[in-house]
Amino acid sequence: MKLDSRLSSVLHVLLHMASKDAPVPSEVLSRHLGTNPVVVRRTMGGLRDAGLVRSGRGKGGGWTLSRPLSEITLKDVYVALGEPPLFAFGNRNETPDCLVEQAVNARVDDAMRDAEARLLERFSTITLADLDADFRERLARHPGRTHDHAPS
Image 1 (spheres, rainbow, N blue to C red):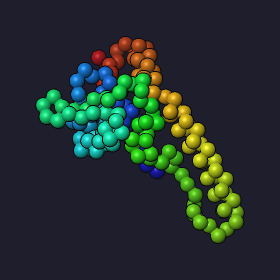
Image 2 (spheres, helix red, strand yellow):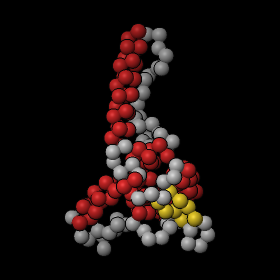
Image 3 (cartoon, rainbow, N blue to C red):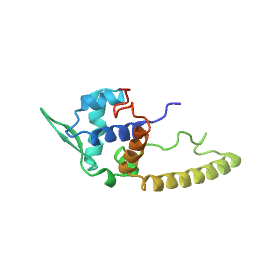
Image 4 (cartoon, rainbow, N blue to C red):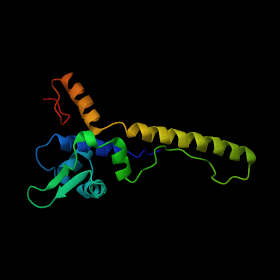
């Protein structure tokens, strides 16, 4: 089963962008993600529409954060991505005739709604500044590493 890694990928590039003193072109971000610049532009366009990033065209153009890291939560990014499914499983049959399956679906659905609400509540408490602080702590423990993943 293929997992949706867009949230993780976008958080990754947002932290890379935050470390740069200039706008970051889609081509550079696409190398971080191992994807096509067109995919980056489409994804970042949703973040721009949500007010999380800005874009500039032409020479010296690219993507920059619109707000400080401390003002962007994981939930903000998740919502800007269109709220992709958080869990990769579901009911075998959404409208079963079987009363046993109806009971199973009801309890599983209830538990999933609860889990999703709790996860989104937690996402709203984690900022990009928190992720950046974690990264910096990890980097301090590995002096031969750089921001761009490669040993020096």
